[in-house]
Length: 254
Image (cartoon, rainbow, N blue to C red; front, side):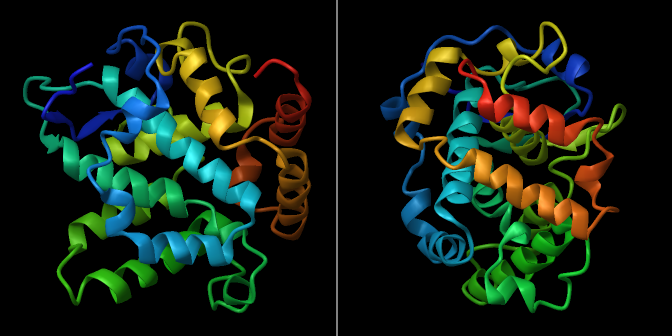
């Protein structure tokens, strides 16, 4: 299935408003999704190694599932809406890859994370600051990323689990927000007529086979410990988050 050359750079943040603009997706195989990458994974190998160093295999697999969920969602993502700025396909895929790959480094128990000056902040901000520093150090000197690109990636990480009901999100931010929601909670907790418009279940299952959900229960324990240590974290503002997460990780249908 051919993708548009450009996508809406900004979309409604509210789930119902966003999904009113998209069609029900068809099944897209992982092989087809990987054909879209255009060498982005190899181009940012330094960032993959950074994520691999800081994150457990469970978190890394979660991050990669989010990335491929996002690529699948591009097949019915808003495009060429009148008066809405556009972002090119290659540019969006690049930003989405780095955002998904690095969005949970703030949960890391690695010494690099736990001794970082921003460690006492909510993990979304803590991780965002670490990623901001990493991207600037690795890619600004070589001009492979610019200030605007890094700003979008960083802000998308900082706000990836904040369920705003009004306003607009960048395409990058909305894709990581929806993909993380699907991977953490599954289909059953979403408002009616929303998540089934994001991702075909067979596509989701194929991605999960390549990047297994093994260890998500332990991930939940890690998140619970983090929330106890940081009761003011952004994640703690989601209603019944831990109960819903536990239900999703123990469900046989996801």
